[in-house]
Image (cartoon, rainbow, N blue to C red; front, side, top):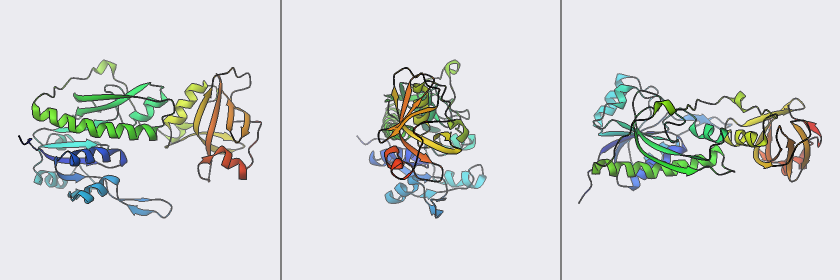
Length: 314
């Protein structure tokens, strides 16, 4: 028996969205068009670079649309010409208007990187790590005009490991999202996908991060600082000040010992990393990036730079 194929428009932009699109294509879904953000300048040479989703769509021979604006009649008419049954979304990067969400008969579904109603918003992966969560996941959800407030269609969870960063966790969640998306479509076709209303009373938000939110407060426990560093990696990065210079810090390890020294005091700086006193315990940092330089291990940095073995991070 041949499965019923929906005419699908896929909307996504960064690397996170690639497994979702690849999952649809590998599953034999009828992706009639892909909408992604315009090419943007990147790198030191500011070379115009296509989004990862565009590259995969082109490789698969799927038509690509890259609108500068999506709240226009012209764009809606373009989508209407594809006669989609369903729009699937994964990290497109813009808030979609209701006129677009409800254009297809089956509406629009989204791959959201949290266990809704927890962490609605733009930075769910970052905030889950920063807040010290032990578990997170992906929710396939029916989209409405609210901020990730639509019905839950299919959730899936994974643990957050002690060394997970936003970068590493995003890879795991994007792969999970790709698998859940095709499962949701199979259940939808079978008529067994049951939408569940979200409990708004238990909702939490995950707003966008700013660079200044990455400044480390050394009076916090080592465990909290570790979560901040990992949640801010790779962007916008957690940082501290030493000698008037900004240092971004990465790859933290918690040392569960009493720290009688003042918070921020650099106890040791050697090939094994930086050891810094915190409000509760010590933190060993294995990588850093001084402003104007590249990210490197502390061991590599100390081969060509001086760093006080006794100093205080501000």
